[in-house]
Length: 293
Image (cartoon, rainbow, N blue to C red):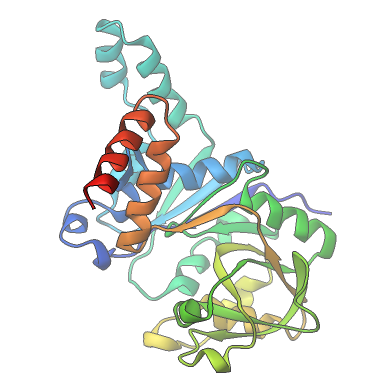
């Protein structure tokens, strides 16, 4: 059985929902308090045992590459100011994993972005983590749960959560082969963003985490552009179901849609409340706002 050690993080999107900030700053670098959201995505992969990570960027995203690189001048300045702890934290970021980058030349969709990882992955199963989905867990990293599901099934694994009917139109919704009870079940189809909740095959949505077999690359190479004229990963996964079993893994962590403005603000508040340096002060401020109502 091949152990999963590689992950792909697509980060080439334009981030139009966060304009004008993303005119100059990659959306992946927007901070949750003081830490870029992509840091948490990489950290999730590392905690799950991933050692090699490919981040797919566009030409305007040098800030992401700089963040995960060493910065000797900054470290020296911090040490000269007796800020050894901060210098160590900066160095640790560059040592989180073996992180490499490749540019997606044109915005042709998630499926096209994944294709850029073909030579990096080789003939191995691999993890995919989308940056718009920030997932926290006190038990196990979400992508780690998917990896465990792969070791059990040897199939394609979709990271999922149950969502309310009024939100199903925002996601790909899985169609179970049989019962959708439990945290791991086989899937026979997916319906992308059903406009009518009554037409959705379940209340289980795919939320930004995958474990894919290497066979997906050959399928992607033969996948024609779909919605929006882009090569869709969903289309390739649906095709792969003809030969490779596909499973939904309902992960246990808390998921934030940080590609959405409210989801981003919610994540920032929740993360801040958990921090001993600012959490109590923020809670007091929230209490003050509540009493004003």
